[in-house]
Image 1 (cartoon, rainbow, N blue to C red):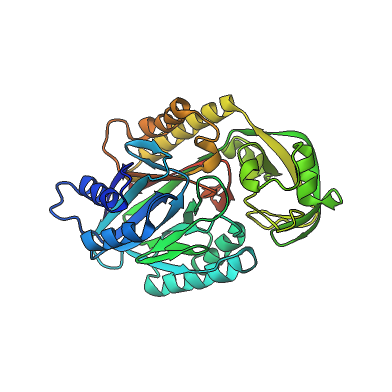
Image 2: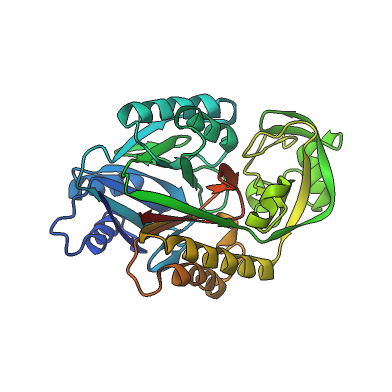
Length: 400
């Protein structure tokens, strides 16, 4: 049976930050050692020092994680350049989790890389019933990566987690596996405690504006033309920005929306699923979507509606509270879009939105909580695995 413990800190010294998190998370446990350690760290930390300290204090632990634009713990959100949050997990049984990873995952090889990781994970533990997926946030084709995992485990196994990020500059991101620091890697953590299940919920608060644009030339997740025009200059023209604009500057102000199947509108509270652009080509002519984008796809410019963000989040948490009441809530994982942090809200509003997420679900209970601000979010919708952007995704781990 798996047990969960969490903590977060803003201590700037990387070794001291890791030590403080482990000490606070595992207070009263008699040891700082654990079996699995999941860490989210902002881009300013010294990653080698974080990992070395983790291995020193928790020598039995398999250590995985990634960079983010901020973290969310039970203590609240922290988007400083040196923020750290952890989930320490202990197992009192055998084969209750397994880990696999890869390096150099890109849009063109996302399916193959993810399928190979899933095969390795399955070989280690065929009883995996839910998967934490952390991957490069720059140019992965996340839908293809999910399909690669599903090719091995089937579509009924829930995939949660997100893509790693930096401080919203969309320049690079990193993933961690034990002592390895990867720049374009991916990590799968398969959980196989039969007493646990993950309940997921997702919400965004953006609305489409204007008429849709049609993808008239594309290859996999790379979009060359919109409405017959070079894609990136055309999009920047609609925003009155020069084509040399880096996508990191566009993330806070403009998302792209794709229409969802009618059957998912009510559950999602929206007709559109959003896409973030984190990479353009060297000549700033084409851009990369985080999912495949075939010719003929219609894309809407979207704007965020603060009232819809808050009301939709309240509805989501009311639903999650009802669902988790059917079992014992033991831990919460959480992925938020980087654009829903300080790029959208000031400090007071950001803390309010996090509190409106945590308080309805955990109340006064000391439930372990690990969240990050990333470039994208994996979360089920309508019983299917989806990749989202600009959303809040909650993954409640419940003991049946």
